[in-house]
Each structure stands twice: as structure tokens, then as C-alpha cells.
Length: 98
Image: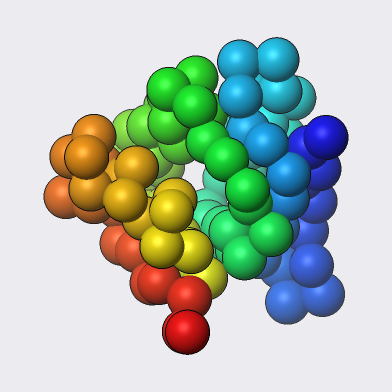
């Protein structure tokens, strides 16, 4: 299961598994974000390469308008995926506190 929505403070909240089956839903949602985007990943269990691609595409699009993608509450497993893929060098990542 995967869900994506805005929280009360305007951050994008993702939960569940962001894989190839859910990537189009995530991309469609994130394509509507026009300014700086904060993504709360506290409830994200898994992200595949397709999910990474969604984040990369969104990041590149926002950079054109001098905005950025910021990932917050990233758990250690998801953070490892960002590190192994080199994406930790692309995004501003705030890890979840233990």
C-alpha cells in the first residue's frame, strides 16, 4: 500500500511502499508541487529505483525554478538506500531521530 498527501503544515507525507507500481501516482502528485517541497518520509517503508526516479525528476524540475526538494524524517533503512545510490549527495536529507 502507498499513500501520498499534504499534512497540515503543507509538507508532502508519503507512507507505505514507493515502488514501480506506485511511482506514477507519486509523480502525478508531485508534479503539482511548484515551490520548495518538503517530503516527510517517517511512514515510508520501502523505496525502489522507480521511486528514486520520481524524487530525482521532481528535484530537477524544482531546481529550474530555484526551489528544492527536502526529505525529512528519513529512517535508517531508507537513508541507506539514498547513501548506496549516491542520492544523499543530491537531496537535503534530515534523518529520523532514534
